[in-house]
Length: 239
Image (cartoon, rainbow, N blue to C red; front, side, top):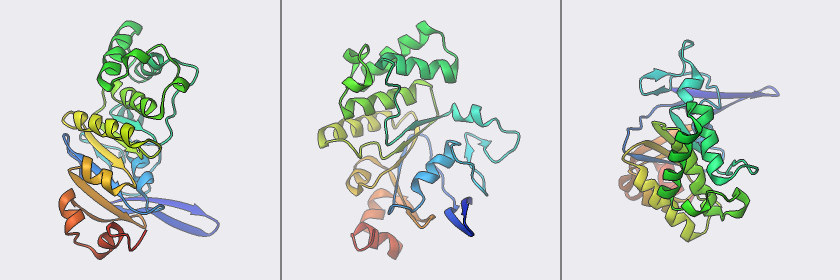
């Protein structure tokens, strides 16, 4: 029952309107829907970047709505991959990953560097550790962002349009990486690409005007949607 209200000039917008769902470890849930339907706001509420207005968000048994909850501590369990890369341009590739660990987990330099190098190997850019982000391609920068997100040992990974600016080859590599990560984390991805949703997710959620209209097995949602709004969006009649 999560609600996020935005107030301004005599109007109130219900950007997220009574949303209820669950995401389990080991699955990828993709959130689709037209622009302005509340998808990104929903992610920002989960990671604590937006204070939600009503309801409860519970991560590994901890309720973000509880005033006793330390939001900063909960954020340690949530890794975020943004649409814009948000890398530190004056830090090297390895330093970007090390800094995240030092800030979030207070890891020592040697430990953080060892983990950083292991993750660069995992995402396929170990040779880039001394480069600066501007020297990387878009796909390499996004792989660095994913490495940085998982470096802090989260339980949940959120991705907002992770492939929107990438070519098909880079997109395919990111999707392979998502599949490799799936078993360890609960992953939620916002995307406008229906093809990507069908390829990477086990479940798909459709948002419309802040409401969660439908959520279910991805194949079922794309082939036999239960709601007319979902069908209209998937078939291109709306959105």
